[in-house]
Structure formats: structure tokens, C-alpha cells
Image (tube, rainbow, N blue to C red):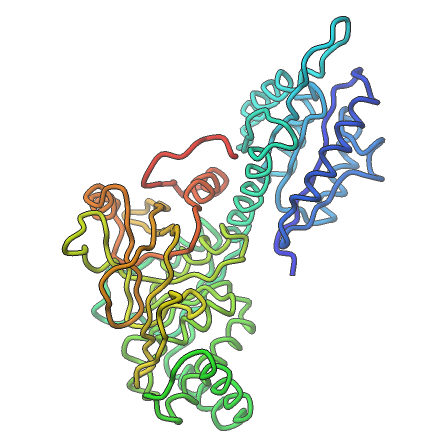
Length: 461
């Protein structure tokens, strides 16, 4: 399913050569349709504006009507020549959406021929957007066939996807907060008032009743889940009853996510599930992540929000894992352990690790090596920050539960940042590099301050 709609509105200057502008527009549209990530739908101005290009005030109404009717989530305003800063500023102000600016790099000048002056015009447009108070993203003046443009365009799609996720988020809270976990408390009123993030509570009693109903009324579906999961993970240490209960918990949560139109889940996995149902929800959280539902342990609502944002930064293409930062590696100063008792998604397992499930429902396996971004959405005294940092999953000593050794450039600086951020030991993790995307998205999310571990570029690409 397409998750993001991007409006592409090519810009030219009134009075410049239309034939050359159309030629540039065709080059740009061809390339962006080639680059367009699978979850993204493009809406251009073909059939809406003359030659599919915007250059004057009297075209703005038609452009706005189409963009709103198509439900676009962000705008890309490529300059086909110098462009028109007036219509750029006005359209950006009217739509109130993330905006990307870029212009195709001019060739060598031809004596006696007027250049397109694309860079000149984009610089004027950026100033005009700032005068209108419109935040925007920017790719350095570069060739349409360059790697810089390709990365900048796809990264902006991810940025816009994070903003969209933040603006319509709903979190399902499964059970109440475990008493010892004071560090995960949050302000529900502030989340709703400031960010429009809605938390839907699902009481412990109702959770248990719904799981028992699945067990009694949907036995065939439960057994199918048991069979499919046992084909991927060794479940020999779990009793048949525990395996069925585990799948019933997964089905009940999936149903509730759909019924409440939730984007993420914070699960009281720590005490309620084992006591009431005889099995923990640890690997259920991993199953949900593999099914595309970001989930956090220990009723960590802010952690679930983090997971939703980080998943959006991957354009909803990567499963997330939710971890504790637990120990430093004894003989490697810049490596720490991202661990939890068993909730990581099995799709991220290390090729050399054979996943198995403990009797209580906890996964046991190592995650694969590779680049990892960890993030944390957190607050204190009404101030909200989004931390992000990039490191590498590496081989290390074996550990029970689910884990990955995380190597960074300077662990002591990372630890200081987390301690005084202020953040906690819980982070969401994803394979890939997403710190710049998360940081860039914050400029469009009022009241959320970016806090990258290392400075990121202001330009995309």
C-alpha cells in the first residue's frame, strides 16, 4: 500500500524560454518517477497547468485544488530555470507541508545564449520561503543524473513520511505501566495537545478476556500461527499450550491495532501476561515488528512513538527492534550491548544464530551485523527531544535473550549524551543510517527538537 503522496510542481520564470523549461521538466519527471520509492505515489501538474509547469499567481488556485484533492503529504518544487520565488513562497505558505527545493545544474554557458540560472533562482526561492515562515528541505544544485540528487530525493520522501507519521499517530497501550518502571512515564495530555498523538488504553482485564476468546473461538487460526512460527524458530522448549497462547496474544493485539487504527503498540509484557496467561509477550513483540507494527516493551509509550517515527524513516520498509542499553563490552571501550529479554524480530537474526524460544516466550538469538541507527523520543519538564545516533552491529560475546553488540565512535560521549539528554535505557533500533532523516523531519514537527549524536548536514543528498 502506498504510504506517502508527494506533489511534484515544476517551477519556471515568467518570460523565460518555455521550450527549454519543458525540456527540463521532462528530464526531471522521468528521473523522479524512476527514483520514486515503492511506498510513494507522485502527483504532478500534467493536465492541470499549461505544460505542467507553475510560473504565475493565476495558476496557484488550480495547483492548490489538485494537490489538496489528491491528499498530498509533501511538495517537491524543482526549478526548471531561474524559477519564480513569488509562487514558490505563496504555494508553500498555502499548503503548510514539507517542501523540497532543488534545481538541475546548468551546463557550460554558451556565448550569446541566456543561461537557465537555476542556482540563482533557487537561492531566491529559499529566501522567499523563509520570509513566508515556511520550513523547507534543500538539495545542493546538482545534475539530475547524480547520486547526490538521487539520495536527496529519496531521503526527502523518508523525511516527509516521518512527518506524516508524527501528525496522525495513535498508540495502543496494552495494559498499565509496571510499577517499577518510573522511567517510562509520560504526559498523555501533552502528547495529544502538542502533537496530536493519541493513546488508546486497553485494560489488562480486557486484554486477557480477548486473548481467551481468540483461544476458544479461533482455534484453527491459532494452530496455523503455531505451525508457521515453528517453521522459522525452534519452539521445542515451549509447551503446546504456551505456543497457542503466544499466538492468541499476537492475534488479539493485531485485531485491536486494526480496530483502533493504531500505528504502534506499547505492551505490558513484564508481569501481566505471564501471571494472567502463563506466557510472556516477548516474542509477540518481535512478531508484531515483523508484521509491520512497531512495538515497545514495558508499556513504554514514548518508546512506541520512537519506533513509529524510526520505522517511518525507513519508508516503512524495515522491521524495528526495541532494546535496552545494558552493558559495555569488557574488552572493547566503544562497544555496548543492545539487549532485551527476547522481543527482537526474527527476520533480523544473525546468519550464524539459530533462534529458539524459552518456555516463557522469550526469544534467544543474536542480530545480524551492519549499520544501525538507534533513536529515542523523550521528554522532561515539557521539553520534547528526538535523539538519534548511528553505529555498527558487530560480533561479540554470546548472550541469552535477544541482542546485538553496538560499536560507536566514542562510547563515553554517547553515554554522556543519553544520561544528560535526558533519555533512558530504552531505544528503538533499525538497520541503516537515518539520523539525518529524523533530524530533518523535526523542522516540520512543531515542539520537537532534534538531538542527533553527531551533527548532520542541513542539505539532503
